[in-house]
Length: 341
Image 1 (cartoon, helix red, strand yellow):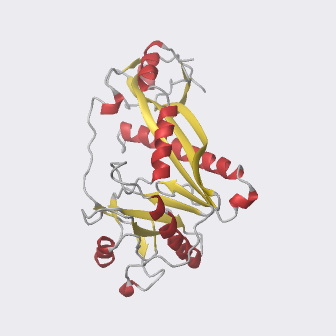
Image 2: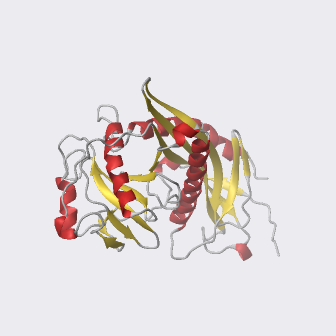
């Protein structure tokens, strides 16, 4: 039986860019990982050494960079009848909802005899209301509607974290759609030998051909002490040997050092992933290709505070996508006056 109850809500006045008015517990530091690890994929574990770029590796004519951005435009409190209150909000029966805008896009970089070009070739924008409130419904707002996405409450997961994860999953799904659409628009000559670089882990996108996951923020330590020590010793352009890791999903991975100024031991270090469905030789070839491609796009600290990890095509794409999300102040004000369908 479907219960239809009109949705009423109030918008929290606190600027969402400062987070919510209640705190969530966070852990700092680089924690060890419980992922299964195989380090003797490319070379035996006791022969690990820095791998220098391979001479003669041909840079692809076409490289696509896909990225997404997300923004919480407002946090709202959705009133729920007492009999529908699942304990996922306030004691007075109001459930938290996130009104968010998110977008995905692709930067196409081409290298030809006539010169090098880079341009945004596709983008898609969505707005959504993420909540556990069963009374939630779509909210009309200028520039688009906040489509209601209702998820089940999980007592083991803090509500803001649960809703944020649902938003992130929707964004990841949109990135796949955008990347496939951008590739489909290429001429056959451009598609052959192209490379797709996804900003972030490859999870959920490992089925895409000729694709690398690009991770510039490190939350866990995956390697054992001896192999992990090598990461800090890498010179610009060098990488670790390829290793395989995974828990409920597997992937090949390696660490790569981008050009950087001397600083912290892991300055300029990124981790790169590719699908575990590939043969080992194919993964190694992609690792060498990443050294030829990613180093070329490393940003400068003069232009980007997240240099060198925030690659130029990704940084430019993020800036353009955030512009296309619309004015957050206008959207926040409109949510205070609009009503759900």
